[in-house]
Length: 518
Image 1: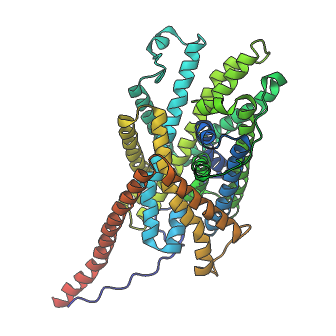
Image 2: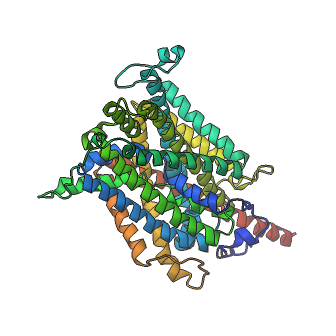
Image 3: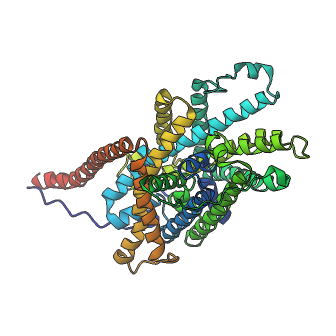
C-alpha cells in the first residue's frame, strides 16, 4: 500500500543563498556597473527610431514633450517599486522571484515563459534590427559623401525604398550581432559589464553631442517649434493618438527592469540596486527630454515624421543651413549613424545579460529544463541559459526577416509585440509591492518605495493606458491573440514541469514501499 503523497513544502525565498546544492552566481558588479546597466539597458534604439512615430500621433510640440516627460515619470514610478522588491529579494531572476513570492509559481512561470517567448527575445531581435538599420545608414552616408571605397559603393543599392545593403545581408548582420554578444556574455559577466560600460559611455556622449549641437550653430539655423498644446475640440481620434504615442514612448523607456534579474551578481544589492534604479532613470529621462528639445529646435515636426534616421537628419539639416560653418556637420551626420549603432548594440548586450538569469532561476526551481540552471565551471555564467535564449532569438529574427519588407518594418513589429507582452507583466511586478506588503509584512526591506502607495498606482494607471493603445494599433488585435496563444502554451508547459516534480516526489516513496514488502 502506497503512502499518501507528502505536501509540498512552502518555498523558501532565501534558499538560493543558504542551500549549497543550488548553483549560485558570484557578486562581481559594483555600483557603477549597476548604474551603467540601468542607463545602457534603457537607452537603445527608441530615442532614435521611435521619435518619428510619436510625432505622427501627436503633431504638437507641447504634447510631444509632455509625452516624453510623462513617460519618464511613469518609468520612475515603476523603478521605485522595483527597487523595493530588488532590495528585499536580491536573487537571480528578478521579477520572476517577485512574482513567485507575490502570486505563486504559475504567475512567475508565465512571466519567465513570456520573457523567453516574447519579451526578451523579441527585444533582442528588435535591437539587432536597430543596429543593422544604422550600420546601413552609416554605409550609405559614406557613399553619399564620396568616402566609401569603390568596391563597397558598387555593392550598395540606390533603391529609394531599400537603399544600401541587401535584405539578406542585413538579416545575416543582425544574427551575427546576437551571436557575438552571446559569446561575450558566456565568457564572463565582467566582460559583458565592460562592453556595457563602454557602449553606455559612448551613447551618452553621443546624445550629449545631439543636445548641444544645435546650440553650437548660429541662431538662424534653429527654428522655434509651434507651442500649440491642446486641440479646441478633443475627440476620440485625439485620445487614440495620445494612447498610441504612449505605446510608442514605452519602448524608449523599456529596459529599466533589467537590473532585477542580475541583482544576485551586484555587490551590496540592498543599497546599490535601488540607487542604480533611481539615478539611472533620472539620467535617462533628462537626456530624452533634452534630445527632443534639440531635434525640434532644428527639424520641423513634418521633417521628424518623415525621418528614418532622425539623428543623422539633424546634422544633415545643420550642414545644409551652414555650409561654411567651422563645424563639419557632414562628418557629424556620418558619425551619428555610428553613435546610434553603438547605442542599440549596447542595449542588445544589456538584454542578453539580463534575460538568461530569469531562465536560470526558473531552472533552479525545477520549472525549466534542469540544464539551464547550471553555472559554467570555468566562466561562472549561466551559459546554457544564454545559448537557449540566443537560439530562440535568432529564430525570431529569421522568421521576421522572411515576411518583413525592411528591417524598419521588422523593428516596428517586434517592438509593439514586446511592449504589449511586457506591459502586462511589468504591471503585475509593480503591483507585487502591494501584495508583498500585506503578505510579508515582517520581511526586511532595506529600501521602501518612495511615494507609496501613489507611485505604484500611477505606473499601473499608465500601463492600462498603454494596453488600450496596443489594442488601438494597426496590428493590435493580432498581437493580443498571439500573446494569449503563447501564454496558453506556457500553461501547458508549466503543467508538464509540475507533473515531473510530482513524479520525482513519488519515486522515493514507491522504493521504500517495495523494500517493506520484501
